[in-house]
Image (cartoon, rainbow, N blue to C red; front, side, top):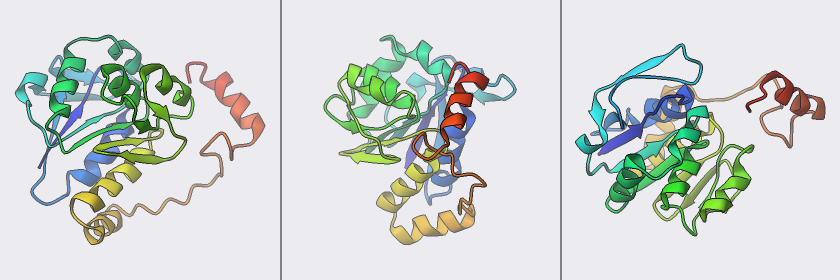
Length: 209
């Protein structure tokens, strides 16, 4: 199985590295990072770069495609080479997936029309603007589409896909291998559970959130 993970300037690292750590360990699986412009692709914090050697045309028929999110997503919403490639590979891929605001790129490309999908809570309402049905869940499976909510949810999505592609025992073994047993020190992982003052402070500390 070939998994193509799309990178673009301003991507959020965990959006793509989380799924990579899980799916890249499946038996007989090759993960390839692809970009419209190969070379060093810098993340949203500007302190990490991935050296992408494959352009979109180098990967014409992946079995799975994953698009992560990040502030750079805003520059990937116009129809162009990436959208054309996504529509093309979606026809033959077993799975088309996204993490965080990567779902907005898929939706803008037209592949999520009429599909249930999720994304980061701060962008969820925007999915409807592109024909998708916003669904406030951590992982959404609709047909051969898999979408994950914000950032860390990509690990949950990847484990879900591992269970569907291989089997539940394999997925659980992978979860054990990476010791994915979250015990966060705070109950503030969603706007519904976070204290109101924390939600307010988020937009003060991180105005672009």
